[in-house]
Image 1 (cartoon, rainbow, N blue to C red):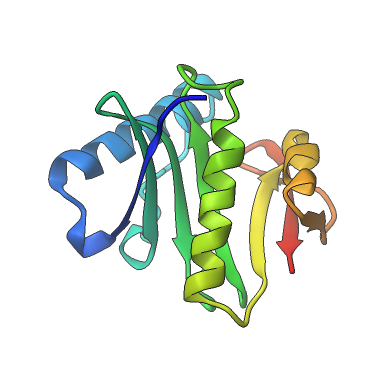
Image 2: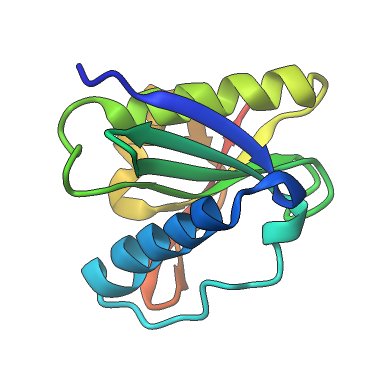
Length: 149
């Protein structure tokens, strides 16, 4: 397994170079790789915690963490990604376990809701999430809401 350095930032404490890397990897994965043109800068970054997995000086894993009542009544995790350099090495699972742990620590009396791409439902189910909505399209990609209790 790779030795990933996990860093958690509040928006106002994000170094500008780190913010640039975050935006670049989000565009690389969600816009370019998934061929899905959409506005990534959605106005929520300033209310999120930013969990970055750094390896060899580069962000290779990332997720946004929200307190309750920002995106959903519950705490939530979104913009979950790993770069193609580290896929298949268990980093996605490590990222989500770290994000879940931060949610539990910071928001102990709430569940965690995600909007998951449908093809990843097995991955999220194995982490303890369960499907709680019908499938819907988000930016042309099938999704469903999942809940971790």
